[in-house]
Image 1 (spheres, rainbow, N blue to C red):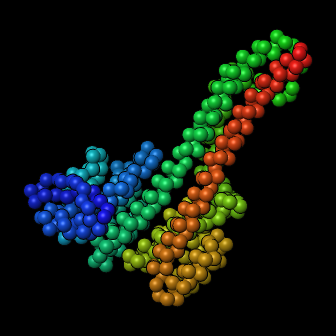
Image 2 (image 1 turned 90 degrees about the horizontal axis):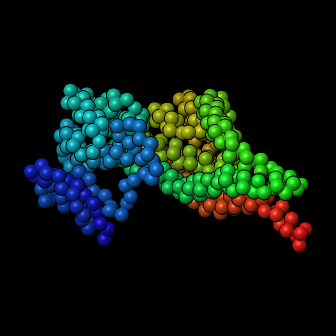
Image 3 (image 1 turned 90 degrees about the vertical axis):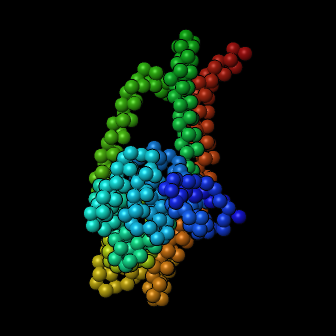
Length: 404
């Protein structure tokens, strides 16, 4: 039987945490309620709570992990029958960050003033996305705020898990590139200049490869600051170029046609679009409004424009599948599954099935690419180091052979 980690409030208002063996999180919540406690959160103890390196890039008062936790806890409290005002008051004291507590206090005070929760969240300077706010607003309109928050928490958890998986999978290749790069710089900046003095004393004709490596070593040793400045200038120029919408769209169009990357991007973006649309439609958001929101979650400009065109086609009375089929960017299987969902009247369910299928395909494709990436990087870096060493030692070997 799995073990769950829970947090709750005792009848005296004290915070309690612990571990409990249960068949599901619902059973943990029920047992806590039977004991007279107010459950706040219950999740499996063997699931990771971090985001890899994502925690290093926190900009908002609530980061991705904290938004997910807030959503889960608020859904649990509302499901336990707590009024929204009291639930928000309970959640204020839980975050460790003063900025997070201040933000939740503002949300609670706005709700106390008579505003809907969606309005209070919308006033928090972009901490909560349009997707988040519209799902909350739809839940309020339909009288199913707790169910909307539960579905939203599931959506956020899936998105965060994929993001964390990518970050964690790329850590080892990144460390490998950095360490081998430093080794190459050490060879060029320290080891190669030692041999340069030897070769100058020999007054011998050196091969072109050796002269090139000696020149690179001298450049690294004496002009390292110029190299750093050149890389910084290149990074600044590229960043400025990619801010240009025309350049960014051209890059996205090229990526879509790349042999290995293109299909992977198409599958990943299709899964993201389908999950967002399915979650919104299932939550009662009209399809046109859902398409407008879902377009903003796509990172590829070409596919975002295709969704925008599909929105106009749907607005004119056409079907979603037919509108998406006009673009070559979306996989045919996804379009056919969406058409089946429209014909059967279960578009939201079919969209979520599309998302599950293409999430799985994307994960497998990423695993295969990363499995091949590490040996390829190792081979390339080893080849570079071998060329440098061979360029330095070959003249000495030739000289020793001639003397012998």
